[in-house]
Image (cartoon, rainbow over all chains, first blue to last red):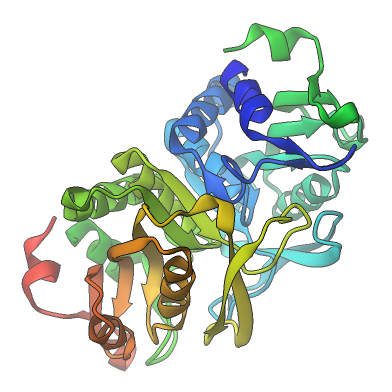
Length: 198
Length: 198
């Protein structure tokens, strides 16, 4: 998605060969117009899947997931990383290690929110090692719901996340695919999706 | 706001005299259509303030804040409760105690995102004791930005948060104001805002 790649190039900051900072438009400050475009793009790519629920993990996934859910006309669930005292129901859980936060979180979704007839689209802001994505998929599978695929805003294609998801049989749609972050510059994967779309 | 009060009455669950569970449409599962209405309502109430930034705290504030920011055509900042490794900038911080999570978080906003010329609208999902709201206000004031007021989705009017904010000189616009949660029922404050609006 061109406008996203433009935002990454112009407003992102490469902190190291592995770390891209996009705090100015995606995961600390959020650009609503760009999120709206992102939501429309995910909705277009998955519209034929008859999605019934969009699911993400707090916090940075919420904005793109909300815009996608809004566009698809379905509700959004965000998995919590910590139980609140209002979560009294039985819950589905999975342990997820975050490399950026260097901690393990138990992600949680109330059982009452998903049924085996749901068709779920999973959205997240980043795909790197695939830990969060696989944890989220595990939580969904516990409910018996089916997974239409993953919508990823920014994929670090030099890390193994995409391959792990593809190997597990999932469709992965990433709006920006980063080939490398070497020499303090972002280089995008040159291929179909990245160059064809908006 | 009628549609919000209807959602609270029909889809909310009173867990105790102090705790209302709205996990089905606000802070675990999210109803995008309702969030869009909420965003339009906050935007309408604060449009004359020439807001330049909408600010909230992760995670449950993000959805209503995003829809408000989208409607006002400005960017949204969500304060983080924990520093990520990509937060390398100088930051503004404040300590906030959460009664629902029974823990103290240091909320954080990168200094680079706010300037003294910003006019800020603060959005949150709940107002109860006012701890989060006052912490957020403290963070904004450190930047020199001015605060137009607070947009609150659900105010527990039987708790002291609103009074604390009003005493501190802030305008508070709450879309649903709850008088009591006694007898496992939600009773709304009967007054101007709650009964006049949508």
